[in-house]
Image (cartoon, rainbow, N blue to C red; front, side):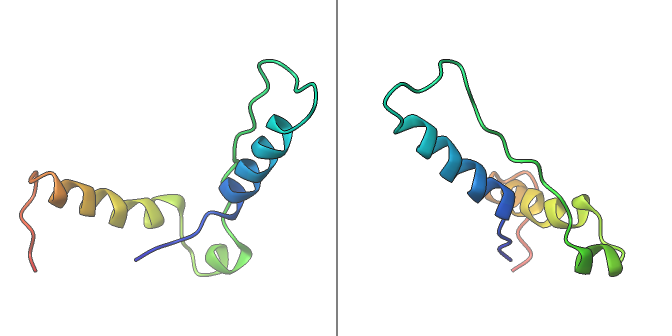
Length: 69
């Protein structure tokens, strides 16, 4: 399962744009602010519903929990 984070993509583009400026401001860093789409909210989903599968896959890859495949 792969989900895209639109806010992270926008933050990365903005950070690259700032870095290309002739006199970029010092110490400025752009961060993504995650949010749930209206469709996800309507389905009753929460942020943890998206994070949990990733954490389970990482734990399997690290051998912390058995891989059931």
